[in-house]
Structures are given as C-alpha cells and as structure tokens.
Image (cartoon, rainbow, N blue to C red; front, top):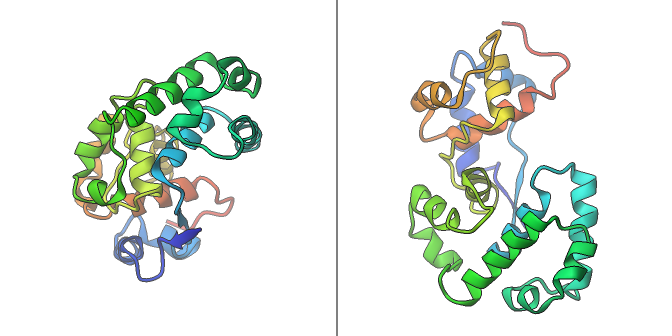
Length: 214
C-alpha cells in the first residue's frame, strides 16, 4: 500500500511554494507537481530494504532483497532475521557489512532498545529520529533521512550530503561546481520548511534533458 505525498499533502504545499521562488520556479513548472507516493511498509521492513539497497542499482538491489525475503519465508521481522542462517543470507547476496547491519537492527528492535512504533515516531523531531536510527550499525544519517522523507513523509528534510541533491542544486542554480554539504546546508536554510520538496526537485532536475531557460 502507498499514499501520495503530492495532491493536498505537505509536499504539495512545498511544491507550490517553490514554484514562486526565482531559482526553483522554472524547474517546478517544467517538472510538474510531485508525484511520489509514500510506502506503507512497516518501518522495520522499510529499513531492512533500505540497508539492502545501499550503494546498489535498483534492479540488483531488488533481486537481492527478493532473495533475502525468500530466505525469511517472506516474513521480514526481527525474529526471523535473528533466527535465519547467516550463510543463507550471505548466499542471498547480502554483504558481510549489510548482514551485520540488518542483524544489529533486528537485535536492537527485538531487545526493545530501538522502538519503531509509528505513533511514537510521530511525536519525535527529525533530529531525534536520525539520532535514534543512527545508533544502528550501518545506518547512517543518509539512510535515516531517507526514512524521514520517503517513509514518514516529513516535509523539511534536507540531505545536504547527498550527491544527487548537490548536483541538482548546482544545475538549478547554474553553478559550475557542486556545493559541499556545509555550503548546501547554509544555502538552503531559506527553503525551510519545504526542503523535502526542494530535494525532490534537485533529484528530478538531473533527469531533464531539456532544462528550462534561465
């Protein structure tokens, strides 16, 4: 199950606001409204998927994720991961690092050290969630911020260190070089509270073969 981020949602508000901004406006007009849909996948399963997909192309990651799910009899939970044969998970395509990451995630959730209840997460700030998730081995700030954006739908997430966001920002602003993460953090402060939408347009800007005229 999925639910739209666009029409009527917070990101739609961000899209409409960005359309009024000098740099983003032409790109919003060319790209159109945000059409991404949020996953209704349980948070634990979503994070397992995110770990599997780290640093892999979509097709390869999907294949490995499917194999991992098969090892777990299509029931991805802390208990099934902790019971699974590590060699079987490795044979499914998980690297040693990713096996360690999903195992650490499963252990923390199973032991109650990490709570992923959606109602509880809804009461936490973005930074508090990033701090909570970053305690898991192999789950860094990038993965945590993607969770905020694409699972929780938070409207003001700004992954300043993401290469795609940096490259898209440079293209939207006509820069010869990508800004570094610190410069991008400072440069996007005025876009708050709509930075998730801005990040989405930065990614989409890289896909355009016919950019808008400046």
